[in-house]
Structures are given as C-alpha cells and as structure tokens.
Figure 1 (cartoon, rainbow, N blue to C red):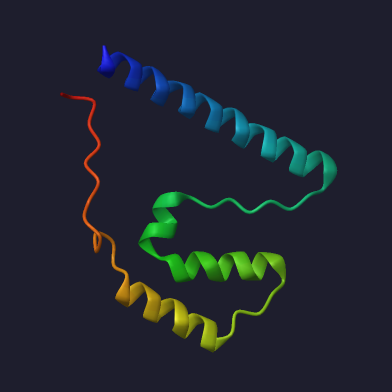
Figure 2 (tube, rainbow, N blue to C red):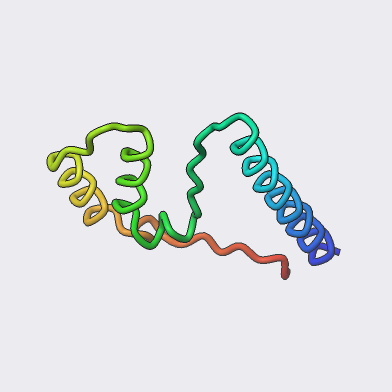
Length: 91
C-alpha cells in the first residue's frame, strides 16, 4: 500500500512540475517576464555556480568575500555531516 501511495505522489508531483514549467514559459513570453530556472541537482553539484547565476539574473554583484564565505561554509558543512536520512517506502 505504501509503495502505491508513494508512486501516486511522485506521479502527481511530476505532473505538477511539468504544468508549472509550461505555465512559466507561457507567462514569460506573454508578459515579457524573465524567469530563472534552477534545478536541484545542479544546486547540489555546484552551489556557487548556481548562486552566481542567481546574482547575475538579479543584476547584483557577488563579491569575492561572499564567494569565499560560501566556500568556507561548504567545506565545514559537507553533505552527510549530520547523518544521512534514509527514506524508503519499504517496511
């Protein structure tokens, strides 16, 4: 039963994300609005690169000091430092 519920939720979330993407692309073209798309895997893989994209999109300057602070934070807070969550639909 849990596996069914999990699969159902994943399908619903995926469907929602597709609809959201279509809506964003449509409204961007119709209203001439700029949108920045971030993908979670990209943020995890290279967070500083993605933050740089956000700053550039917003027309803001990302200082060397800020980049250095982010690098230090990432060194001190690696993924899994506080344990690893184990999510499963299996009992």
